[in-house]
Length: 220
Image (cartoon, rainbow, N blue to C red):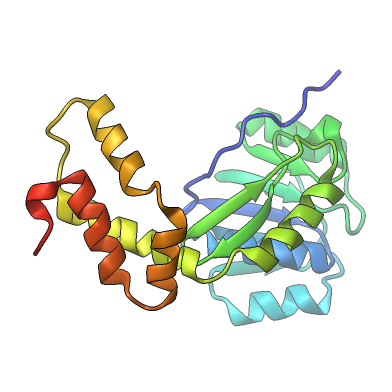
């Protein structure tokens, strides 16, 4: 039996080729997600939905072929997705992906999938990925909806505050364990940090982090 999707990763797709095969709105959404990650996307749709046409028309990084998938379409691809919206020779598509070593997912077909995309909560540079290892995708979606209600924009501001603090404290010059403990202490009062950035006082959050990780650089 096929294993579940247990290893969750974030891929760097900027400048890499991704292929989406499918005619409908799900294909359009996958194309948008891949473009958001910086991939160069080729969409293949024999009967393209208006949403897919609109995405391709609005984005020069998307190439739309108005035809069915054909062997050779995965040449040079890093990742491929087939949404099953329209006719597809799944066996041929999968066989080419094996031959070319392309990470591939045929949606709702566990026997023809290397990965399942997690449900995502996005707040700027923050990504919270929710996965049920392919066993309960509807639950992952519901949990994402729940987190969408409770994770506010202040979390993205906190990401920027921590990034600025990392720049100010500089390179690690103590043993890793001690460095890790300092960072844990700096971020221990999560509610306090979120209150600062939520009120627009990012400097206060940065100063707190810096003074905890590197007391000698409390002020700048």
